[in-house]
Image (spheres, rainbow, N blue to C red):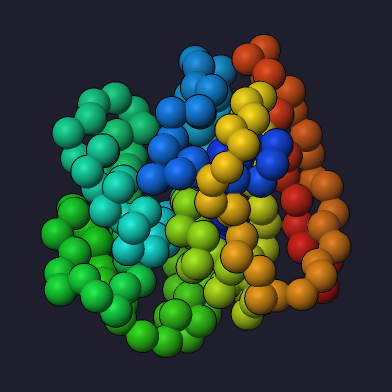
Length: 180
């Protein structure tokens, strides 16, 4: 069975975006880029909520390089009750039964399923026990206000630290597994 892996960059306060969807606080360098290129080889499917899907589509469709090549070619599933179509290459639109669709995806295929951003979707999947691993890149920047990564609704959940890696930029990458 595939794993669902949530990967996000966050501030030490737990924000994954600043006010008005600001992402200018990300500390990104070649070392983080190499980590992303290496770990994305595990992903066979990406899951997005509508807002993250539209932001990612807008950025990656015109970008170049190995991360862009991956983002534009990998299978993507966007969960939205308001989108009329999903026109980014290799994207499937799902309008209902988020947990059921993710369970179906977990049961088929061999590569892992990644969730980027998508705070509401990630919280839904966490509440349903469908997140198998959390990968957090802690950026060494305090922004003071923003959107929290998880919206709650899943109660207290203990995590097991699987690995920790400090990058030269000050970013710390943490891999956790939920203890159920």
